[in-house]
Image 1 (cartoon, rainbow, N blue to C red):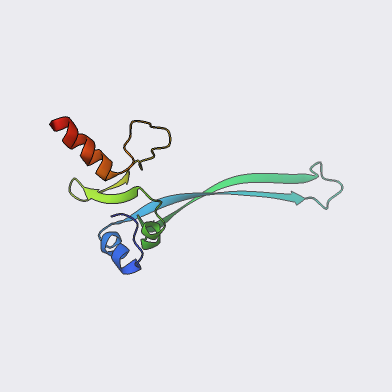
Image 2: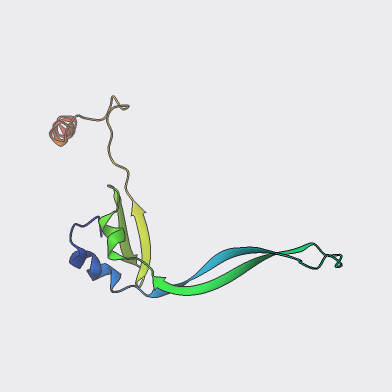
Length: 113
């Protein structure tokens, strides 16, 4: 499915996809100071990494609406999601590339005769 304008059209694809688990890493740092002057410890610090798991849609309809030109998503091989990228033609750096499809057809017909 290429880029679409309507969310309802995008939902035709996204409703077929499963939800996936995403791990999120959160770094937590903290420090505590001691009010006891007789203690040999002035402060304590800590650093922690916390991992949380959340379930999110694999692809949202908004992802399909925002796709750049030349990119698409496809369900292939039994429903596996693939992201496709098609190169867009650009004749600025190619002197051999015909200016239009009509010019290409004329060149092909002339070569066949």
